[in-house]
Image 1: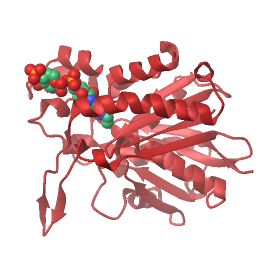
Image 2: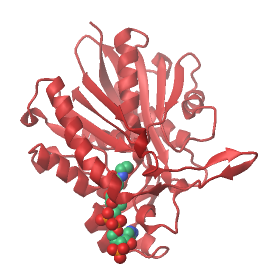
Image 3: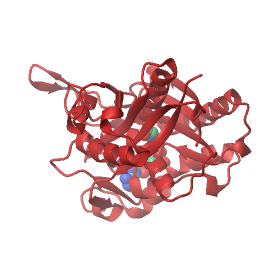
Length: 319
Ligand code: UT7
């Protein structure tokens, strides 16, 4: 039986760090409010000449190097992004070209903050079916480009970045299970509704969110999807070594961890340094934890994310 396994991780954060104090100079906010409501202290913003594919390229090269593969070995590229370089072609096609390869299948996945888990699940199914042997799965975002700077309830939350993994065919299981959900009836609660029509933008091209509705749904969804992943693998919460939840809000992550009775040391918390980087959040947090030398062979890792749509999901990994 063919399984898929993460062979290497990589990530990239743009150089420009923007603190809560920096934001307080341009919007009516303050460090105390942002930290107490979200845990966010700073985020990174891409430079004007950096698009999602540029961030993805650096993260991908780092993952390729860590996995010890060559770009030429990659036969599937999936980029999860809600801030693509352009309407089309897919950012994955642009990334493929920048990586200097031609032969792989490349496409984007649009599941907003849950995009990386949707991408990982898709790549896992490609590999387990024999349709691919070596996949590059990337989450890359430049959310700073779609912020409404008049809306202090959202513009302080998001940041830019990219994270990537190389997923390879393996005899031993690495991705144990994935669990995906969507409920489009919530599509207005978190969206960027603008589109292009006759050379103009129709609707708002800036992110809008009903924060408390998202919060309430997220805490319930994380708990349910975490139990779904545990049940699917006949595991108990105390068998989880690492919980890597979408880094949107420290309070939401802590709530989910409490419901699973997980101690703080098993819960990856990067939201203070990254802000909410949407589809990049989980692979960024995973790569940072790997590079800190914390994750050991044989560890069980639960990933969980929720984003616009609503789209949400989980993945259980064996490292
Ligand atoms: O990535 C997808 C998943 N996204 C999420 O998980 C986000 C989920 N939602 C949240 O994390 C929270 O709802 C927020 C952090 C976005 C907001 O926290 P909240 O406790 O729900 O605050 P609120 O929106 O109810 O606003 C409370 C107060 C309001 O003032 P009044 O009306 O009570 O006087 C806001 O105007 O806080 C005010 N406020 C701010 N004050 C200072 C809102 N944003 C700010 C701000 N600085 N940046």
